Length: 112
Image (cartoon, rainbow, N blue to C red; front, side):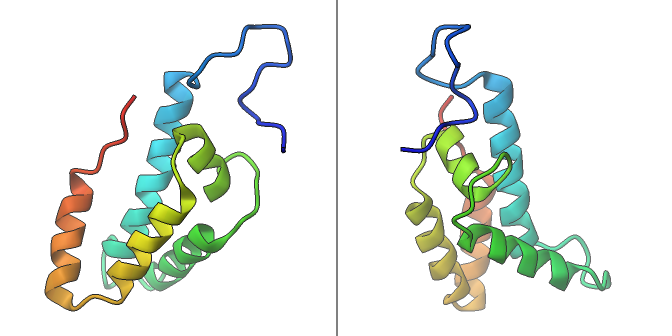
């Protein structure tokens, strides 16, 4: 089992959930990655395709470091596979289904 970046080394008692600020950071990272895939800022921005591919690569990565997809999933106590399945379904969907999935994503919440 790998060591967690959020676990105490004995100086402080371990809590069941990470600090709310850490969770908010992880949620922000996750939501930005989703935004980079489903709603690039402007189609006229030539970098949007790079950001979109970067986000897709981020979701596919199994690397573990602060800010990585695996780290975000651990902080949020979420299953990486659930997010990857959603993303695969999104990418395989027709344009109308993509719009509906993006609308639902706007209301996406992870319990604190």
